[in-house]
Length: 421
Image (cartoon, rainbow, N blue to C red; front, side, top):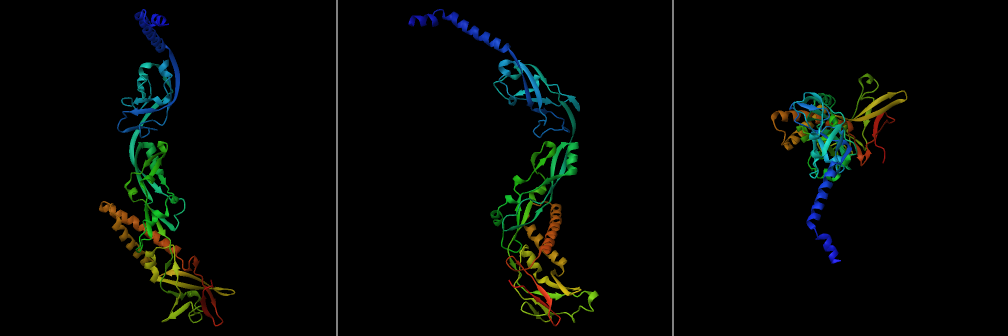
């Protein structure tokens, strides 16, 4: 056996080694000479060397076209069969080609990512689907972003007030036609209140007047918009206004009015002959007291859905007005809460709220930016005050609104009573 193996591997070993090496060379030459053809679909196309003031419709921020092409490669079988569509891309030089041309792609336009594949040397023929390149003006413009009312429910224990600012801007560059259309239409931004937790707002809430109005500043991860002409690519909002973007909440709690509320009768001028202080007199009782000729509700009342600051400003300027309404069957009565000199109350609310907000704003920058900030915030604070006025309601206890039964007694006196609980 030993002699047999020696004859095989040792005897004439030089000739046998040369034979093996020759076989390897022949196999390599034959293998490389065998060609194969494959079709590769959805191959990315990257544009380089664009003129500074030009771009292409559908060109993404990373330099790739949104359109992909089909490439057919013929070449060395061992390379072509190992190649995958993820292994290469097409690179097109846009310099010195004019504003429109049909791309002629050769193997020199192929960029292979696999270091083990020498694609340029292996490819013998290349064909591709038609690709027309059209350059267009590149412009940069501010795009308006309209912040819409949030969706979802406010965190438990809180009431949504508003979003501010409600208009932002995003600076974007792109094809002139696409950018102008987007500038006319604008973009929309909507937040989801359900993503905010009560614990997050509790951490922001203070104890002083007005500090039950909580500002939740929008996280950077939320400040993003989708760009339609970039196939809804998401971009962070880059306008300075986004730094102040926030959602305001009111911490809901029962606030005592802490004081009696004047009660008076409204006598319509047209009906003074029959309805006047001589014919209709407000009668005092356990609910309605009268001192120095002034009637008032003598009961501890509460409000909610308004801030402490608002209540502190208006509490001494409230009154309940009873309005007699003649009917065929007699007289019925309506009543409502009125605010005395609401314009002055609004001015006081806005002034105090603005002063406290301005103390906390250290990023407003120039005097012009400060003035603009104050103008815009004043508008929103006035709207908030007016919403508080519209939603103002008196409560006699938790979740029990104040109800008044108003009628005439046998002597023609107006009797104001409260229904029993």
